[in-house]
Length: 271
Image 1 (cartoon, rainbow, N blue to C red):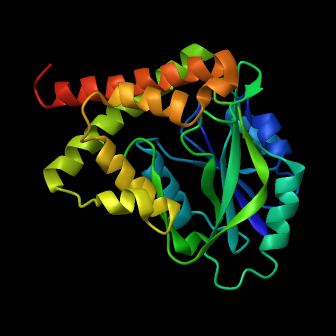
Image 2 (cartoon, helix red, strand yellow; image 1 turned 135 degrees about the vertical axis):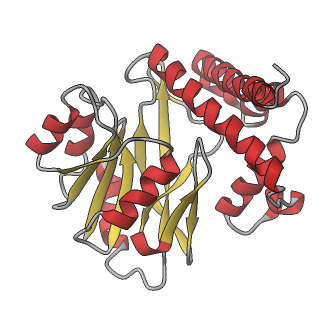
């Protein structure tokens, strides 16, 4: 009753365990960005159907998949190769789509792991829309995309486990170097088009997705944004309760935000 969508780029290390965690589905699709390792071979060996598209941004990649892949089932679950579906989450999802009513998407809680522990506190948000009707979902923005469901949203029990450092710290830095470039481009685009945002909606909008869109737009207007991001994750979100891993992660996210600021200045000709 649920089809699977996995986005990949050189994921031979992560993909086997990822696919194993969704083997309860009989319709697994891998959208690969022309990997140079054995990602495609592994996907085919494990029974997935492989599609190819040159990566430009996550939003465009995901939207292309929803527009072009012929999913067997009316519901799609999206995940990355460094994520794993827990048995509890699989059970929760399969039960939820039996009688979904008018629900367009389901929000799922993700657990990020770093230095061997679950970052229970320092995450900016643990909730993501991952299970949805493909005709009721779109993605927006460069860099980290925003999910835009068309219809009501509900939340499920169970966890999606995420291992963002599974290929090492250097790979995480490389990936976020790319993300920061796209986020800087998005920042300038929003300023040029005067994309509307609302302070009240950033704090009190009825849906998380609407709050997140406005919070991102608001965040780009703040001075000392990297420092604010670190302080909010480490103190307001109680990241210090995650020990050294929480401190290190908050520093890394602050560094990432600093790269966005520097690249935005560079694109504006201020570098």
